[in-house]
Image (cartoon, rainbow, N blue to C red; front, side):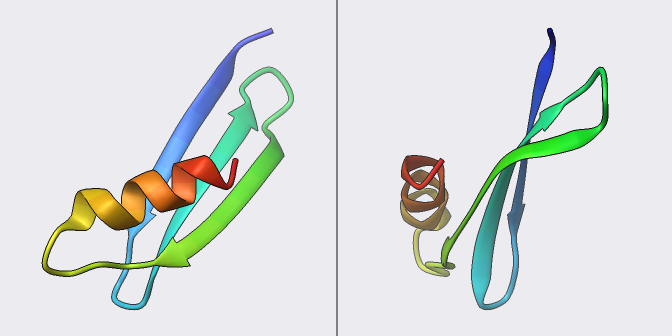
Amino acid sequence: MVFGLGIDTGGTYTDSVVIDMDTNRIVRRSKALTTRDDLIVGIVDSLKGL
């Protein structure tokens, strides 16, 4: 089984997803507020939600 990780830092929210690459199915998803001054904070918060 192969998994992929997707991260999108948007204007309001940073989204993270784990995708099963064999079936193209979303396994987990998470959302956190985007922190414009330091994007890594929002990314880490979103990843913690996974």
